[in-house]
Image (cartoon, rainbow, N blue to C red; front, side):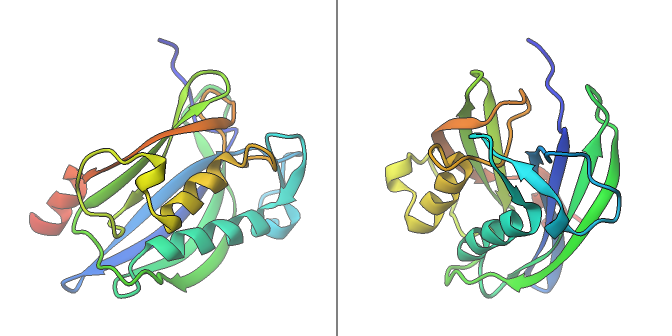
Length: 201
């Protein structure tokens, strides 16, 4: 099986979940493709990212739309979405260089409690037949069986809808360099590494 690499650019969203007085910073990573190579240090508002239908939107707008979705899933009592960074990858490597960052500083709005060491993995099929995943740590979904789209609930369906955006154009790329086309399942489980951080420091 071919090895796929991140990039060409990667949006990294940093968020913090505080439970029982212990704060852990998590990262969410999505591949994006600017229409031109941005100058390091330029603002997100000056970086246009291409979508799956050939249009482009500035990264600040895309990030703002994405944060609005994440807030609705993250616990109001425990989670904050802190800031985002953009990184550029060397082709066919895992070597990345920093490009830019943007502050966010917004709290979650979901009434549910954060799940200790919980992990939500959203799986998609890409246009080239590969798989793409979006992960969210210690959000509000309890551990359980795989969840189909119709059973996700409105706030999580909004996440899936935004990642796909089949008609309007999706912004996040799979590692096979193609855009997501179909959602398969969301897998609500527990992350062992986070569990160890929480309970076996």
